[in-house]
Length: 217
Image (cartoon, rainbow, N blue to C red; front, side, top):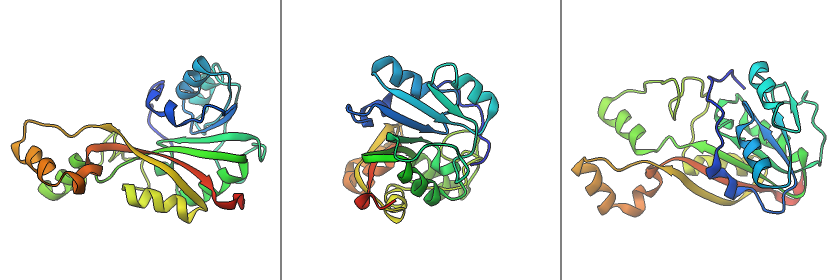
């Protein structure tokens, strides 16, 4: 995983609904300062571990999570196998050189019936599509979908394929953080005329829940 800019102590409350109510042991990969785990612990009886390569962010996370490992999420990470009900990747997979390997590794950390929960930025978001088509550019930014630290880019379809190629079955995929309306008559007309075809372009991210196929890991 590349070093990431400071994203703040984000609670990511929109992702809470994707964590099964029965989950008790949760592993948050790229936990940053622990905002999501802290929100989980404030609302549920759970044990939350974090993995975070940035030492400064990990130090903050250690104040609110049960355990934080300062490390990239790779084969050298000291995390027990078959220990967690959920492994979380909140806007993390796109920062990784090999997200397929990361998902395969996540599968080894899951208990039977465990799931991976992830949010992934949507390259087909209308703002990105207009930027590419109208401006003929791909201008990297400090944050957002075209974050300059992103190594991978996904659409709804390719995000689902990423999980399938990594040995998972996607059991839920939703668009989140919708942001598409503008005063532009052309944009509003396009969404009215081709609503089904353009539906995925409304969302800045997709949230996925996936389980290992036959728990083969």
